[in-house]
Image 1 (cartoon, rainbow, N blue to C red):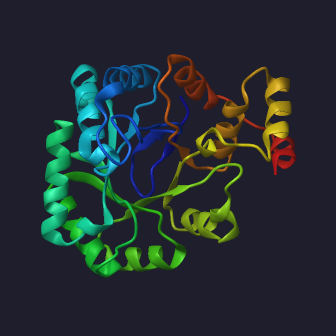
Image 2 (cartoon, one colour; image 1 turned 30 degrees about the horizontal axis):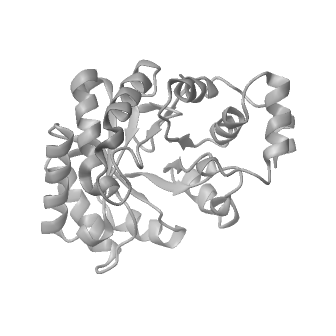
Length: 269
């Protein structure tokens, strides 16, 4: 599995991670696929997909419990674990309650990366960033970052933080390139902030570029989703697709080995 450096750290993560949205429920808990989800997380790590991304919001916390069950089988030290705090929990007391709740559900004493899930709703970015630094200082996380932040919001976050903001997790795929149009991708690269792409396959809703992806995939004897992931890796970002089946997990892991040429990238633009 190809790896890249995470922000201003000495950490190298696999370019393909595992998203966990709807494992254990969407907005509310749903234990109906827990067994399948735990199995998928364990298999992902076996394949080298060792970055597991989750959040307190997913399944109202149940997704973290599912990840925690998988960690018991895998071993905590084999996984780079990311979780996220919801925007109405960013006041210091609420944030500490959130991280402590997440850690309890995950069955660990720390996450590797803790993110502000969305920009603050009821307090300043400065205060939210100062609070997440407290989480870092207490040893509840090794690194901090943000999600869904714009350039102006990132600038505020960087200025307010005494520790590096190592990533910005945003929606990004071959058909949703707002971070390119807005200049956010370039800004992150210039400031050594890793971009982590969620919905990297557009929730399997890729249509406008489907024929181009299929052509490149056919030439390489791989699948269109693999080309879509390889496209993101070529852009220098991490991708965290969700997958439950062993077939899709294997495909995602192998996508990291696909090195698209400049000609192919130009064709896919």
